[in-house]
Amino acid sequence: MSAYAAATITRSQDEIAARLAEAEPPLSDEGMEISYATAPGGRGTEVRVRLAKSAPGGAVGQKLAAVIGTDPQRRLDDALRRFKQVLETGAVVSSEGSPGGTDAKQQRSQEPAAPAPTSR
Amino acid sequence: MRANCWMGRNTVEVRDVPDPRILNSRDAIIKVTSTAICGSDLHLYDGYIPTMEKGDVLGHEFMGTVVELGPGVHDLAVGDRVVVPFPIACGACNSCLDGLYSLCENSNPNAGMAEKLWGHASAGMFGYSHLTGGFAGGQAEYVRVPFADVGPIKIENDLPDEKVLFLSDIFPTAYMGAEMCDIKPGDVIAVWGAGPVGQLAVASAYLLGAEKVIAIDRFDYRLQRAAEKTGAVPVKYDEVNVLEVLKDLTAGRGPDACIDAVGLEAHSDLGPLQVYDRVKQAVRAETDRGPALREAIIACRNGGTVSVIGVYGGLMDKFPVGSWMNRSITMKTGQCHVQRYTRPLLERIERGEIDPSFVISHRLPLEEAPQGYETFKHKQDDCVKVVLSA
Image 1: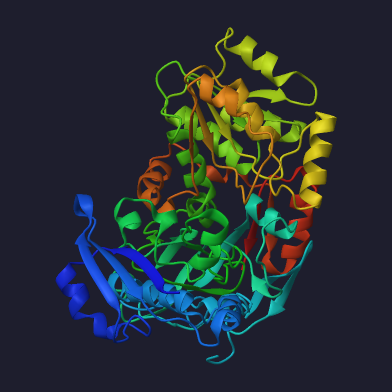
Image 2: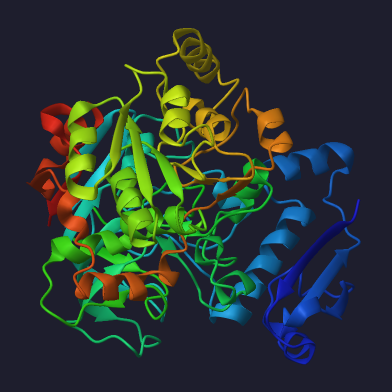
């Protein structure tokens, strides 16, 4: 079971490729298939990524990983979203409820949307 | 600091919470001077919007003074007076570049959650559930404003808070609702809901050149206010047949455009359909009641436009798809792209073309927010709009 994700980023292909090192795993992993295309109408660059890697533990392990948000698909979705945020806005976007930013695992156990006393 | 927090269905409490801090270089901390309770806050209060957490700070209509800035914000200074749009927008993604700020592709950290429900996600929003990002809201003494270099609009004159506060949401929302009607000379517009947004939608439709604007509601005091303050033609839906009245007012054509300023908790006096919707909502087979939207579609003239600014969350039954399709009705909708409207609408206020503060009926201190929610929800004491001072 491979993972796949795609995003359109308002940056040039050259810039995206050059800054790929800033991405988080599994997007930054070796063996990541990544392809670029110019988005139509001046919309930037279409980025498509495929990861030929499954969660450990066979079918049961994969199901469990999908439920708790640690399977390669969700991790890849998160990593691509965060990479897009870094390229387009300068940083990973965080809220009081998701202080670590986009994270499928954390989405299941949200902090209240109120300022935290100290860094969580 | 003190903040108004969601503590469960029908329960809000003003509590002590930590002061917000700068988390990102493009953040600002605002000391809130005025904030308002929105009709859409009642959807949270009533428990119709999923993904609320106990302790969430509410509030997405607010303004105040900049007290702290991240190093990445260059066009604001400490001490500036600002109004903050309710959608959080980065200004750099394709949606923002197209002016579709409430669809910002980067500002919602919980976009994955929203995609499961809606297919694609909307922007992050202040104090409006975790589906829209889990951001702490502005019914508080202080609030963190992300992307402070994109959203907040500086108020550089001495206009009082009350005249400019509603640039944060309801005035742009109402104005966009009227703008989506693509009003031409002679057009008759009908607005479902004579609450604060409905009343401002009537005023906006007149600003945009409508010939006649009709307001539909069941509360006398709201209709009366809409008639007095905006020049609306009032229609009380529990006393007349709305469709017949609208046909009469337009000599059979139907309104050229219809605005739904009600949303998912619409009430109907058609007993059986109201019961049907309530039961389906209660067993979670339908999340959104739809009598206002259904009626708006059926009432609209052939080839007309239905503009939806009332908030919906999930699924609705008995959508009159045949009426919509066969009669070439255009539907336009969206959470308001507030950042697109703040400048031109501030200018309209400055020129004296409109003073949106006419909707305010109640002024309370932040500490009395829970009372404000109750009064607003139950439409006690002729409540139209509650403004809280922090």
